[in-house]
Length: 121
Length: 107
Image (cartoon, rainbow over the protein chains, first blue to last red):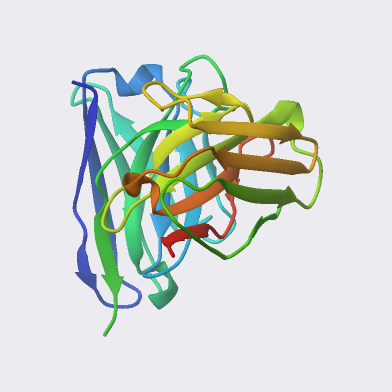
């Protein structure tokens, strides 16, 4: 079964760090375009970051310089390292796979269940 | 950044009725790279439509998408009880941005 399972969320103080993980099954992370998308409580969806199958990475302006997306091919797992966290980073974080592994631009067809990150003192 | 504006914010309809949801982009969306997602409370979004009008795998044919350029529409021909949810449009031709969502609620 094709599946994504996130972990690593929790409560962190402003200025702190957290690393989210997204374990994939049923497909190979490194052969696909993988993103992180977040959703603040009661709000809409916000794209955060993408890693291309070739390894290139891109970020939303709101997290550039603070967040780093990466992957471990041996573990078939996607990561999001989040530093210098702010209250406005509080959200459910989803990992998502793009539908076509060969197309830079495509919709997200597989989503994880999400992991909650709360930034508060 | 392409801004997507969805309307209406809330749509109150009865099962069996037709739902028409709008998504307007601040500039033309490349190659109709426009998707629609359904999200129910406590769940992840689910892809319904990609490429403005192609249904994703397993999506019933009561869901249809149309439009190009800056104006896109999601139509649910006859609402089933499980269709009451929040719907988001997303463009993926110039970075990736989402609309603010339309809630379809039971009247």
